Length: 273
Image 1: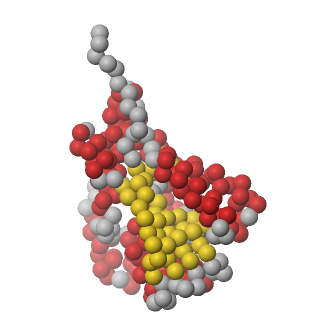
Image 2: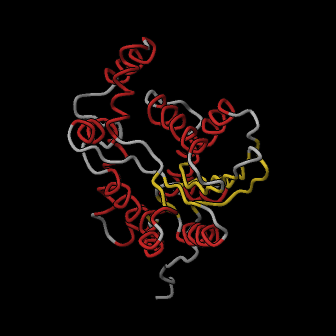
Image 3: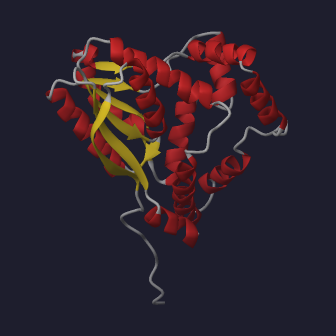
């Protein structure tokens, strides 16, 4: 437990805010996490409201639904057979963190009045399935990696058994167990988010494909000022894809924001009796 608490403070989850330009367009990339600390999301919403006032169009991450085979593939392959947003929300509750979409709802009033300024810029589930099928047929290394990954898991495994069991235990525990679980959970995030540089077998679909499509959209869409809120892991690949389309793309400035912080308040019973 002490190591988990140490990780939260010593290895904070730092997320980049990067300003990019090719001389014609200006793009702000705000790195995101699905669950994080309340101050982080409040600061992001403040920045987004300011960006709207400054004439930016907001581009959001979020794989779009494809009723039928696309949604079925996405649920079974990437969401463990469930609803990914619901899983993240539950995870946030157990960990004492917040779910990002709960805060993005604060922008819904402006989105209703100015829908053209609020764009979900992601691909849909069927496009991802089609890319997966294409790679399975055209890329032997990808197909081999998928087969090896599948073979390494037991029939009962969904790849997150330990975490799932731990979350279930904490959710059903006493208040003290839940507080302990929240510390452990934050420590787990602090550790796991440091592993983002380790390439996953599905990265060619989850990251590379979506980065290519996003770069095309940024390059081709009319808005000259775009504010992106995307997972931080997308930044290196997206920048590479933008430069492939136009070598003039460059980084103008950047800063770091802490996405998951240690709890600001602690409760305990004084040993006076």
